[in-house]
Length: 372
Ligand SMILES: NC(=O)c1ccc[n+]([C@@H]2O[C@H](COP(=O)([O-])OP(=O)(O)OC[C@H]3O[C@@H](n4cnc5c(N)ncnc54)[C@H](O)[C@@H]3O)[C@@H](O)[C@H]2O)c1
Picture (spheres, rainbow, N blue to C red):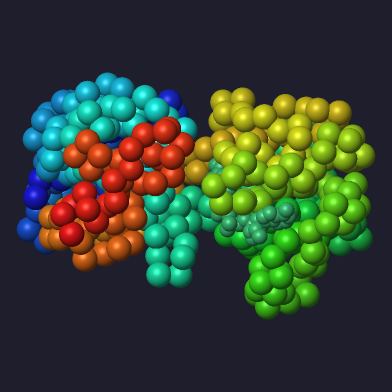
């Protein structure tokens, strides 16, 4: 199979679909890989590394889309890329189609086989191609929060780890799932006093078993959150109700009770945020202040660490890319129900129920669509 890796063209997107070691793996399996010149530069991966791994280089995305059997990307294809997709071509990338009718229409019209990272499942019921980005965002949250607490950033001037004779800063994490657990790991490592709030008894048990007495776990009630928010130097929001907008656990009135210069990092902003005063920001202008509280609400936090994020993503996508290349899409999708759950659009048919439902379009079962 000929696998194509175009350079990402979305604003401020520096990740790349395949790293050189992934290319080498695919070449080892007897496939050919064509990478757009400069595609990996933003993640610190020069063209020479791709050549050494056995890739061919292309000067334009058009050359790649015109020839590749499978396109491996990171972000959803933009309009100019969608025009170049061909019937029968495999597209393997994040799509996030439900809220995006234009992209859905174009992918249906393309006749391509579009497999979305974010709906691929695992035997444990998780979304394994989404998890690494939650891990990255969770681990970044205390780092950006600590920076925002610095005086020059408008913060309270508190060092999260404290120093001998001066108490550590207080970090309150709302949501103890993937992101929240990774945020706790870093915050504990920084020496902060950490409290994690969750409504799931299972999550609280798991956190207590993992962290012992180095964090406090609290069951999520409005009164508990009210008290914790007042004390927090850094409040990190990582709650998720799958498929729904994030619950607004922190009201504007609660934000007013926070200490001047304290910081909110609302990781859940991509689902609308769990703080009433949160609104999405970008890496070029990441923070703003409401009632003296610094808010950091960047919707694509992993983009800040494009290199780490690219490798983390490749670790989970590569086995599926290899299966698709080795077996062809029909057998790969037929044999693996979890990969099949990633199939969103198949030769003009929408095969992901929530996407069809969100847009009032006809739904075709993925099995039927591939002729099983
Ligand atoms: N901003 C970014 O760049 C970025 C990057 C990756 C992920 N995210 C977002 O981070 C959020 C968290 O993702 P995740 O993978 O950690 O999710 P997850 O499902 O692993 O964890 C969410 C946790 O929230 C808890 N929760 C739900 N409702 C709650 C409530 N009312 N009170 C307390 N806890 C509650 C759940 O029990 C669960 O433990 C998602 O919105 C995800 O999209 C953002």
